[in-house]
Image (cartoon, rainbow, N blue to C red):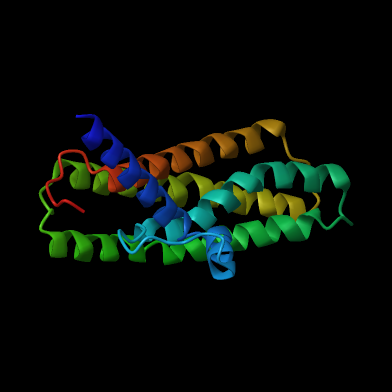
Length: 187
């Protein structure tokens, strides 16, 4: 029993290292030889396309508040524009995630698994939040910042709330893709 628990713990650590190697920070450490990626399993595809949009969307509300506080001649406006551009670009790239997900699930013969169906539902919900709530609010805030209009604190707080929901859904999907409760694929 203890041997099985220790083996499961080691397998979980290898999966987390694998996911970390999918991010740009870990891949640079990997290139320097400080992180050795395991031979398997491969990181979920959503970590490569969704991580940047999650980070940029989370950074947007405080950056917008700083840009307004620092005035129209600050570099804060450029930072807000860059964060918004990152969110838009990676939202488009994130559209490929379901395609890779369905192809992988079909290859693994797990299309009917509960964890996968839940992940698909949560992915759709996260995409809906991003498209319906996060990006339009970023657009409005960016327009107000570039036109030097005052911004209420409640608007950035509301954007931060929707961004938090988006990030929470992606975190749950990532965990489901790693743990795969009830999976019998052995991977």
